[in-house]
Length: 395
Image 1 (spheres, helix red, strand yellow):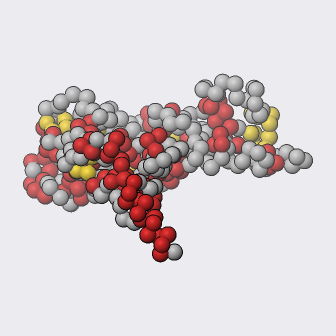
Image 2 (cartoon, helix red, strand yellow):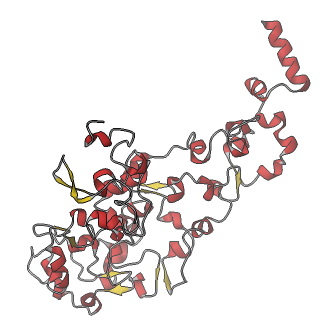
Image 3 (cartoon, one colour):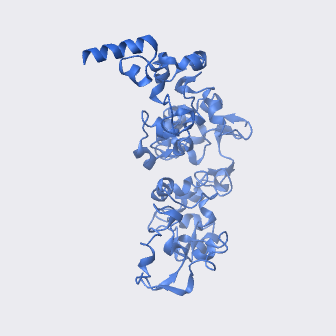
């Protein structure tokens, strides 16, 4: 056996041998011949990926043949996650940056070399603005944003707080703005400063103090007493006393009206300022995600789900509805706005088709869950048999 090992080593030294064999005896992969064809200077920079720095090309690439382009062992994030695993608990409680969610690590990082830490090929703020461009430069900018220090407030991959924030929003703001309690705009503010983002833009604004674009009229007029001097425990009645048109929606069978003394309106709306006349606390569907985190999580992680829509309000009413789940219409009617042929050239649905399990009419959501399931066509069970035999038991 010793003689065989001796001659194997002689063969490697004399003229080659396989990459795997040479690596077994401590010969770095790149020394075998990677840089005979690939210019080493193309893989060198201020920051190098550790396998490149150690000349361990075979950590990611197969030297002979592979099923994936670039002779990669795996594609996309599947390869990266072998050394850089994600943190699923942060996916649940905060959020995941879209490139991480889709496994597109190379949207931000170079796999071999970078000019900046983190294997970024460009200045960090420029990398962020590829996807998050500034619509137009505004009069007042938050210093970290204006200086391109996005990661002063945001995590680049995953975070345990909405908006990929490093800390809860108020805690993050007050880590720099401890003196804000003495500012003229905060004098008379009851208790500890809180809910900073209900008045202030986090990035830039055309108003002094980074105030948001649209102000609640009493707030703009400095008439704090019109809301704050009302009897305690009024709850949403404080808001509805002015916004009476909302009450008719709130009285519908399924609604967002909260019981008791809690003011449900300010769960979604800022009482002071917002980016449009709705005065929403957060942009887009993030305001819904505050309470419906489990639904967003399921849609993000399910193998099959409805393609993304511009907003939750494409299907759901904001305040109240006569339909289950606050839908804008009966779900079959709602679905056929886009899926025009369903119910005519597919399984029948409607008032005349009764689900014997519930004694209610069959609708699209009898079989489909648009927010995500493990099954094709986002069915609630497998279409091969399990779903059908729920009703068609003779089969």
